[in-house]
Image (cartoon, rainbow, N blue to C red; front, side, top):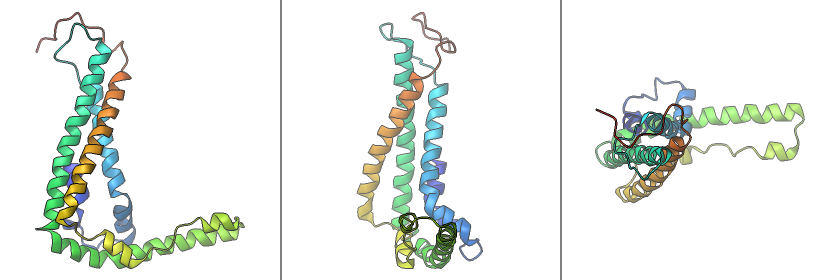
Length: 199
């Protein structure tokens, strides 16, 4: 939940005027991917450490690990979803103005840095004599208007999209947790005798 809140409420602790442009650009481009990577890592870690507490005599040990690993993923996705839904609501209401201020101050630095890096890459390919197709494959220059629009606070109607993302995230993390449980080595998790472990 902390990672989810940090990924969405970063603009409250960052001052675009005093933060260097490359850091603003990295946050703008990769914060969502980094947050998702954190959720996946936590899910894998939880699924690796979970121990079934309610043993089913008719189920194999691996099946129990898959079940509990998937449950870990769903629980983590639920906690993340609640945090992101809360942060989206705050962004659309209480923190809307601070987010607009951040967007106004950060947009010129992000667009300028992105375009300067793109220009260097393009010139490097030209110097190396790369094919016109490879040079043309580079993305278009960043437009300040598009950058600023991507930094604007969400509208309340966007909360429906947050709920849809929660469902997809729950499925993804549940599958990752289940697969992690299935891949656990049997020698570290021996077959149970049918009796639960003592607490």
